[in-house]
Amino acid sequence: MAQHMMHFDPLSDIARFDPMRSMDDFLKDMGFKDALKDFGRPSPIRLDVTESEHAYRIKAELPGFKVDDISVDIDGNRVSISAESRQEHEETNGQKVVRRERHTGKYFRSFSLAQDIDADKAVARYRDGVLDMELPKLLGGSAKRLQIS
Image (cartoon, rainbow, N blue to C red; front, top):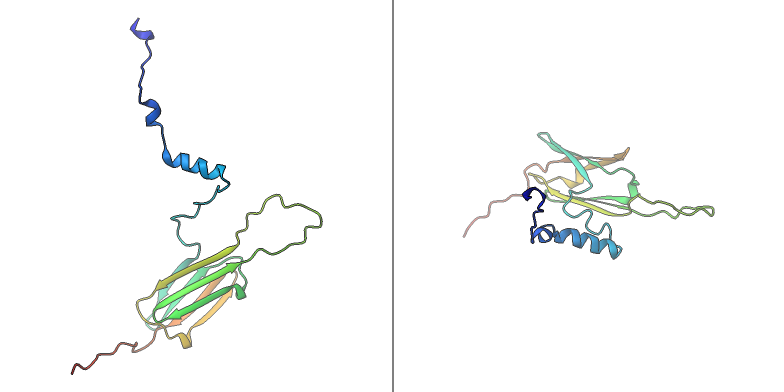
């Protein structure tokens, strides 16, 4: 007779409560399916940084951008890369868009190097979705020892 008894756990429904799942469902119902999609993810601009005695070389992946949509700013040892993709207004000839997955928006990546950059001698080229920068180190740097009086 004990074989046919069911085990009852009064807290089983509480144990299954997942507040984040409820929040996800709420956002989906409100039309914000992907509101938190990129939260906590690394920057979409991926880098390779190499260093020689006299310069840094940076290769940044920026596929699908035009040269005019990319900018690089150098301030001392800080390098900032930004890129913006805009939605092009395509002629659809009466067709409706069924799916649009290409992202439009701004991307930004900023990082510091160990030594200041000689911005006047820095060179950047963009080809095949890769931004290739040669950033010469500022020889002698801008460090200065102050005389104390």
